[in-house]
Each structure stands twice: as C-alpha cells, then as structure tokens.
Length: 374
Image 1 (cartoon, helix red, strand yellow):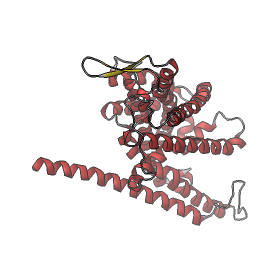
Image 2 (cartoon, rainbow, N blue to C red):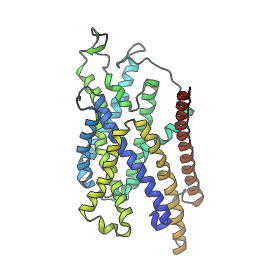
Image 3 (cartoon, rainbow, N blue to C red):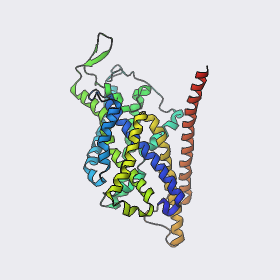
Image 4 (spheres, one colour):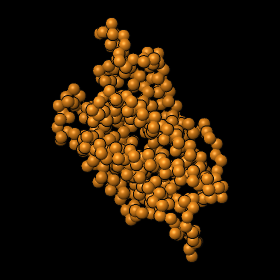
C-alpha cells in the first residue's frame, strides 16, 4: 500500500520502521523467556544462555509454520492470558484485604503510597505503551484465517479494548502495590508469593526461606512467573512470520506473489527474521532497555504511516473517481485535516521520546566520564 499510494520513499521508511520494531519485539520475547525461567525455582541449571538456546529450539521451527497451523494453540493461550490477569490482580487484592500487616510476598513488600502519576516518566511509558498495543503490521497476516472478513473490524476492535483494559488494570494495581520495588518484568515479583501461608525459617548462614507453603500458592506463583515464558513462545512466531514476509516483499518487490509460493524462500527469510534477535538477547537482556527504543518506531507505525496512506489514497480516489466521494469505510474522521493531525502527532512523539532517551543516555555517559576524570 505504501508503494502504491505514497511511492518508493514511503515504502523504504515503512520497511525500516516495521523492521526495527519487529526485530526489537522478537528480541524482547527471547529476553522475557530466559529471564522468567532463570528467576523460577522450578527450572534451574541451564543459566540465561541455556534458556535462550532452549527458546530458539522451540520458536524457530514454529516460525516456519503457517498461521493456519497455529490456530488451536493461539486460541487456547488467549484464555490463559485472561487467567494470568486475574491471578496477578486477584493475588494483590487478596493481600490488600488481609490487612495492612499482611505480606503475601517474600521478601516482604511494605505497603507503599506512591503517587498515581509521575509526569517525568512519560517518555518511558509512551514507547512501552506503543510496543504493547501495536498490531497494525500483523493485520494482513492475522486476517488470512478469518472466513468472514466483514467481522474483522469488530474482532480487532474488541481485542484492542480488552488488551488496553487489561494493561491499564495490571499497571495500576501492580504498580501501586509494589511501587519502586517492581521488577522490569513484573511477573518476576511473584517468585516469592506465598499467599500468607508457610513459615519463614532462618538458616545457620543467616539466609531465610519459607517452608510449608500451601500448594495453591506455589501453583499461582509458578503460573504467574512461568506463563509469560510460554506466552512469548506463541507470540514470537506470529511476529517472525510478519517480519519474514516483509523482508520477502522488500527483496522481491513486484515478484512477491510468485516468490512467496516457494517454501525455500519463505523459510530463508523467516530465518533472517528470527535468528538475529535471539543472538541479540544474549548481549542485552534488560527488557526495559529493549522496549524503550523499540517502542519509538511504533509511533510511526501506529500514527504516521496510516495517516499518510489515508491522505494519499483519498487523493488518488478523487483523481481517478471524482464522483466517488465516500466508501463503505467512511466515518467522521475521514478527512485530510484529521489525518494530518494524527501524522504530526506521531512525528512529535518520535522526536520527544527519542530525544529524551538520547539525552538520558548521553547524560549518564557524560557523568561516567566526569567521574573517571575525577
């Protein structure tokens, strides 16, 4: 669409934005998987690099399958995601209802009263929100298994509302409860969940551990800590397929429809998509660092490029079909002024967040140089 309506320069920009975003997303999935398993007491002995190797052994073959072959797995995991939200929010609410002196997590988390909003962290929140909410680039691939295409608008709309509500609920409850003690991957905070059961025992060397924890508390703890690892196993192939298809299209151009019929071509470009971020996760494992820069490209994907497509496609229709003023998708926002507002909104977000991240990085670098000179 970018090539058809906006020209080759727009296509190059879109491919660069989606490529950077998807590589970053796949990188983050590998990091989440390895960090979750490494923090769990149920799985040990492999180390971070070993879990990355295990992750690659699972997701690379899955990335070579078509989406239709993964429908049952994806649908079942959707129910597990809902259960994950309920487990996280429910366990914290149970702790709150138990009274101010009750601590259901080890180490004990003192009940805090953090501010509801810290405006200084907006540049950190915005790219994470973009990273978590974007699915625009995957809509063509996700739409293929849907038989009734007329239902796509309601399907994606309901999914967006549900995921946005879930993220807001988790962010408010978990952030308010743990405050500054929250982990970058917040599910890791449940590694010491005991639900108020068991006895805290001090060993001879001074370390403490809890014994006789109830089975339900152990199960909930293990589920919250380990499920994200399973979840990213399902999400990784979806994004790898999307990125592989984009790389395939960028390489073959107008011959894409013939090239994508070849299993060899699909396999080769999907390997190009899924292998680099796995190696990258071995070098940088901090999820916050990955999502900070990955989410910046999401602003262009979510706001700027759709607005450009709206403007130029409308102009092309008016040029070739002057009597066709509206389509079946026309609504109150279908005008060039609104599209321009959305476009520049995305541009401003990219400049603001990227500038803040660069400023923060350069400030830390300059501070380190100053300390070394002193």
